[in-house]
Image 1: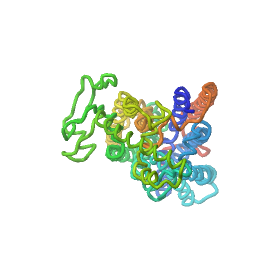
Image 2: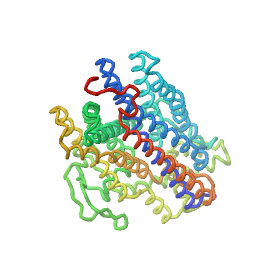
Image 3: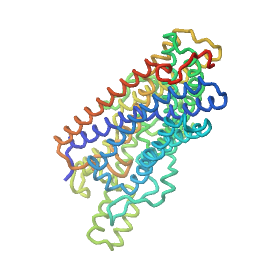
Length: 517
């Protein structure tokens, strides 16, 4: 018996809330870890104590954020067993491997070097501590790599095959899964966005100190590092985001069509819709402002290849669903007679479309007897929330372009040694929340754009959930909201406390900045 629609929606809501909350901490951890390495490197080679204080101060804020990230990540992973039991059973052989490696890196590699970073200042030589800091940064990034390999496989499942005897997906080529181009593109784009988040964080808080006319030398030096590193990372994030979009068009054409509200296929090269009001009901975009040729160049990197519209992709999915019916029929035959040669050949031929056949489970128990109307409904189910995708993507890209401009603007003022421009400082300070807005919307685009699949083209989301009572889900959602709210209060309290204290307030060896400079 299939889980009810409310169970599926609540399971998605719970995982979405916990994942988005967890990702509030991930990009800052990624960004600060590299910035700590850069700052400590400057300290070791310049031998100026102010750089040690700079590293230690941002290290304290890194430590608070890191602890919160670990706490929220643990609870999130439990849901694979509680709320997504069939998903875990169906793809556990594949998904569990990178998840287990990530867990070992987070709890052994990262935790070890975090301890050495904080308690090794007086116990390790300067160069030994510097190595520890860079290993901490490396461990943090490798931890993200394995999570994104797992997520990349969900977006583009390669290196695996369905085994009708075990009724599970199984690894056929670990190297293909490891070097999945979608996973690698997601990794470099995500870590670049994390570096931008860390840079904006340092830039904004440094601007806060300059606005209050305190810790001047500390803030100036921090802004120089954040502006330089941030500009390079902002430009990288834009370029790497373009690469992700190109790969998505090749492997997830419906996601790209939804992002662009591309309802019909236009002659190549397709125009990019800058702004508009997409209507899923009318299947059109009202008041659209187009930029000629741009979408075709971005999505296909050519002037002759089309970017397929939603209606054409739905028609193609109807064909895939009918092939999926044949795969399902062959699977049922093999269940009753595993030696059925004809069914084995049919499953081998139509097997890649089995997931599309499973979409019909929402409308009929016997997939092989699906009506044309049910096939049409299942095909239109493959269209995600177009207005949400359209605006999430544009706000995210707008933030990315603003970050590049802000870092360039900041770098110019840093080079000119002009740190007294209050309008610029206020812009830097008020930009503080924007990296998180962009990061969260990036995940909305990635995950909502994959719907209705939990594994793209393989397993529909509504089939992946556990059989739970809605009351149980409401109780667990309430528990998570309460727990995460308490964590948020602790995070805000600690961050605010140490930001107000500043580097002088938490340094055991605080001294006059001018003298140490």
